[in-house]
Image 1 (cartoon, rainbow, N blue to C red):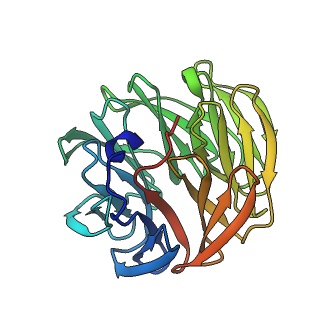
Image 2: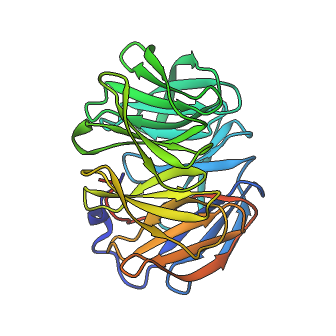
Length: 315
């Protein structure tokens, strides 16, 4: 993801905007991060779930899973730039670290689409059939392999990007969703939404080496930015766990928050964690030092992805 350095010289008068996807309302809410109020909500497409910035940092991609398209937004203002049709079932999306490949996990249609990246344009290289219910995506640092969790067949697959072929598949825990590579490409962390734990996978030998108990509905990850700690949202338990990626253990839980925590982003100073609450129609702001909820902001139905730029490092 983008470095905060790109906007280090931005004038203070420029409004800092958080972009929130309301997947249940087919809309985007824009939040003024200073006043912590929604200043604009507009339709974007059916079932917008996830979003991310383009390699040139000029656009934020909003993936409309049921709309079969991607909308480009201005990362600073949230204004719509253009719409790209015929991107089929893009539930979760990701650029490879070398920015040469773009992956769309088709949750609804049981497919993983691999695209070649040409600037801001995407060219479909191959459709990889992957039953059942592809969910979230991760990559090796060398961009040779992408990993995708299969939510309803309880599997993890590895796809070789050079030929877009499945290298291997392995059984893992119940309803795997979020997947994250630990520093040094040592392990993959898998959030088990159908359970209450994170599984630690040695992807080189395709073995589960540990299970870390977190909370019911363990779902999605967001690194703190210190290259060691990572947040995990527990959607059913309505908690957020903090994991140590070096010791492979839980070090704390954030409690007393609204129901259904899901996607997260961290402010560039590392002081605040912004969280969407899928079951509460809210975005929450958590003080990371005290692990306390500071405030909530009403948004649309089933808020999912959240993004602002600059943000803290994704390492």
